[in-house]
Length: 300
Image 1 (cartoon, one colour):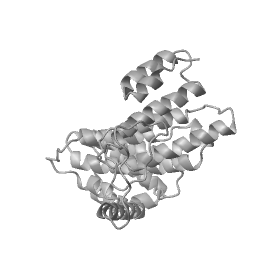
Image 2 (cartoon, helix red, strand yellow):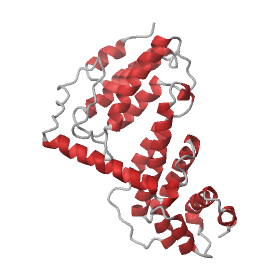
Image 3 (spheres, rainbow, N blue to C red):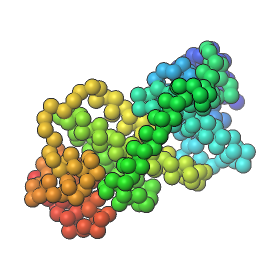
């Protein structure tokens, strides 16, 4: 039996020390059911300490908790084990979805702490429908949903609506690479690229969640989303100080045909090859194989 010192430290709010004790106690069995269940509790309660204090910092721990609850390739020994992990997974995911782009919990969320939580102060009461914070939150949720629907209707996005989760994961990675390529000189445009990246990783994550427990063999997309959010944070408040090529502006706006028209016979320079590959992928999805081949074959 592994040491339970981590549990005592966790109750004292010594999260980093609890994790160190967990590592020492489960040094020889870190991938076991007992160890991963304990790790999930540490990470969720650590995230709760930020979430219910309305502070940034919860997301990384919630993602770590999700990874511990459903490790890739782990076989659960019983239906009971599967059910308790799926229940915990849903509880953590609900809180993760309540974290906004700045890392703070949204007002009026219905997140609940870990059953063993010993928070310094109780979770804030969920406001009633008549109170202004929830009205604001509901309005924000409507606006987010509306923006997401609009993005799905953009020509470039509509082509991949039913492309499948692996294609969505690939697109998320391609747009993330594009954001990295734009970040140095064009931070405003990099933010747009990262928005596309998160959009596709979230589509992938939704499909992953819908197919549990079979999908536990694969990444849940949470780590990828977290890395995109960290990349956005790293941009700070910098703004673009040079003009962005018109074809990239059009592509970021979801207009792939406008992007092709603006690019014309030009060859994308080396620093924008990641965006040229995205445009080529869109051309392929639209059946424009010849244009896609030209983009992929073009040598700066």
